[in-house]
Amino acid sequence: MDEKELIRDTLTGNKKAFERLIELYKDRAFAFAYVRLRNREDAMDLVQDLFITIYFNLKKFDLKKNFFSWFYKIEMNMIKNYFRRKKNNKQMSYDEKNEDFSFWENNYLSVEDKMILWNAIESLKDEEKDIIFLRYFQNMNDTEIAEVLGISVENVRTKFFRAKEKLLNILEKGGFDYE
Amino acid sequence: MSKRIIEIIKNEEKLGEIRLTDSITDKIISKIEGIESYKKLVLLNLYKRIAIAASFVLLVIFGIVFFKGEGSHKVVITYPYNGEESVELVGSFNNWESKIPMQLDEERKVWKAEIVIKKKSIVEYQFVVDSIIYTTGDTIYKIKDKNGIEKAIISI
Image (cartoon, rainbow over all chains, first blue to last red; front, side, top):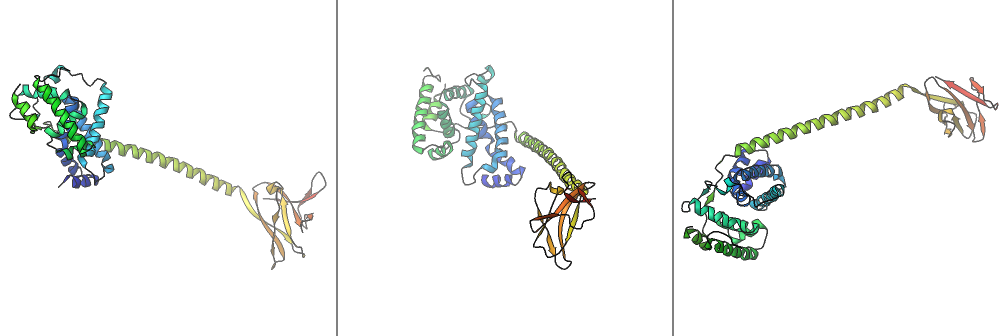
């Protein structure tokens, strides 16, 4: 059963269909939230609220359009609201800095490498973070990223190139942005 | 830092999977059900309030219609036909404000008009014959006002 069928079934009141939709999207929703929030507990809470919002607004979704793109926009708005509430998005607690990244499945990177990489990603601008996330974690191509972000493919290519260069520059300096 | 990271970024390889290891599906469904129950409750309360308000309004309308009907009666006033062109009725039942045209019952040879009279009230009236003559006709019950003008009376 594809996601559109799951959406249709959910709209008829089938909670099992929505459970499957959650299972399909929870990892990327969490990953996206974590990339921006850098706080595991808050990211998990946000994902829960996100799915609740999705459920109660599902009837507004146009089935002809890309679901992930719609989903992503709602998540982005929720992330913005989160930061509006928190005011200072650069603050991290000691525990968050010492995250073990157990949720990040990668057999060839050590925890230290993950930490360096994550810190490097974090020093990017929000839109650059999103593009890096969609490319490196979601394996999306330029067209798919453009659809999700609502920008042109050309724009994605330019922004991705810059973000990648910036990321490499930071990593080559040892994982810290000295700017 | 391992050089592998730089290779991955340069080669645009996938950085692995981020998985939400904690189970959140049941929590989300449970919260949704909670919200739905709450919404139903709010809606139910709203319906109850609307039903109470509607019942009250209906009761008031019923009361007005019922009690109004109880306190007044329709009465037919008659005037014998004697070749008049027209006969109208004027009186205190409408504060002498307008003339009510009477209908001719040709079979019975009588002019008729229906008016509504409040219970226990005394109504004064006159007939206006051919738009000129104000008279009480051959009505039995009549009075004279302070100016000496004769008026027919009726009471229920």
